[in-house]
Amino acid sequence: MQLPANRKLDKFLGYCLIALLLPATRLLGNIMRRDHQLQEPPRYLLFIKLLGLGSLIVATDPIQTLRQKMPTTRFILLTDSNIAKGIEPFHVFDEIWPVDTNSLAITIRKSLKYILFSWRLKKLWVADLEVYSKLTTVYALFTLARNRFGFHLRPVFFRKFLNTHNIPFNQGACLEDNYWRMAQVIANTDDLSITGQPPTVRSNEWEKPYIILNNTCSNLALVRKLPDKTVAAICTWILTFTHYRIAFLGTINDKTAINRFIDQYLPAYKQEGKLTNIAGTLDFEAYYHFIADKAACMVTIDSGPLHIARKLGLPTISVWGPTNPGSYLKIPPGQEKRHLYCYNKIACSPCVHHHEQLPCGGNNVCMKKIAAEEVIEKISRLLAYHSTTVSLRSV
Image 1 (spheres, rainbow, N blue to C red):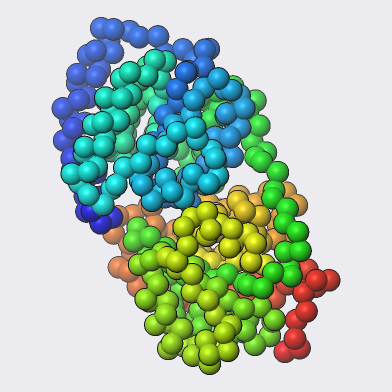
Image 2: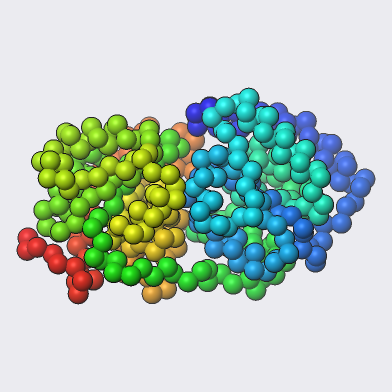
């Protein structure tokens, strides 16, 4: 199933199931009066995150800290099969249950299989990391877990009656802070460290051959992309005034479009061997090794590779329009000069995740108004900060 179809299914089927299950759930809750105290940690903790590798990576610091607090608990993840491949190299979970969300029949069959399996797990808790999904709330309910944690906000008001523990989701706060709050509730403490893991330190990072450029994202919000002409101007500056080559990121579905972009805007640099398109050519482990071992830094829109780069220790320059960097980009103290961003907040921004119908109707003026020179200035500033190891040619 494609993403728009998935969202429609989640909305309509989710509401139908909730309408059927909500009265029975409340009645059984009043009759059974199960103990939902959190003093004793569970034997199993199942996380549900079907979409969004980038946001799952954002959650890894709270989850890894939670593992330290609950060393005897087995951490399990239910997720899309592609995300399963992407998160596995980080070794955050003891076990991953993959679901192929591109096929409705496979999704239903696998989901039923995992529900039946979850019934055999003693002392199971479930943490639903999806913010807006209806079906993941229903799925958590079907596991019959004694404690079920989920985010609560107006679009999913029904969770108040289906979860045992509701964590208010603050849309004005950084996403990572919301994940930390959920981890604190699960650990039953307000003292859970929110400092995260120490930043990854890479050796000789400015001597690496590539600047990585990413202008791809999921179909959830294609309005996050920069216009091709803007990207071409950024590439031309990098290839003209620095010694770096450029590597383009993307999935196998982006490969043809990237090749077409290179042929249209950068044919001379392609002939010189200064451009590499790795979209869809590497498995995730090799993909991560390429980013960590071959790239000096990354220039990217708001997309999963941004969070991957930060997790792997790369300096980043990110470009934002329909989303607000304050909601997704938490920069640790001392790292401010390694992670720069462009964001010209206009009246209708942020809109993604706030409106089903975007105010611009898809005409993303917030990204179109960002000039290539603004991004180039950030790149120049980042390189100048590390001028002891980077040689910029005179402009």
